[in-house]
Image: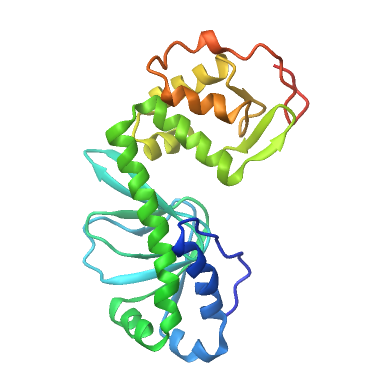
Length: 255
């Protein structure tokens, strides 16, 4: 098997080092393992397609080859996103969790028994999985920290800061980030309502911390100043810290 997707770097100490040395894609591409992985099925999922629903009795495990999947809990019509799965992520069906594709995706699926045999046959596979588990655990810890120790405003700010650190691009006057998420999706990621999430984002824009260049493009003027908001006891009093200097955004617009 061969895959063109770039391997993901997982930033969790030892997990990062091990996942770089033992990439799941490297293992899949090794001709020595072709006969074994023939028992795995490739499944393509359209955007918004369901991978598995909560309550499933299936005992299967899958590797994400391309795209992006969202793992979430659902209760009384409300959804709460736990984390997302990107290429090289490994996940198993779970009776309490649902998985949906947020982008057109492709996964490699097999039974839990087949995967257990793979772990015995291919030692490097178990080491590669540790990296994927480390990433999922890190996401879960951040969610718990946010729900227990932070309010909605702080969670949204940390979400934006995480996007800037992972995907941000330096431009004149700040850091540009591409918003691939709709407001509803951000709300489920931070455990809030659409209305509250939209209101807080607009307040950040109005107060000068963020510039909206286009519908999907934002510029964070100063990462440190934005982070300081999460440490303030009066997060609502933003007007006192409005950035006084007009900013030229990535598209040449001026606020």
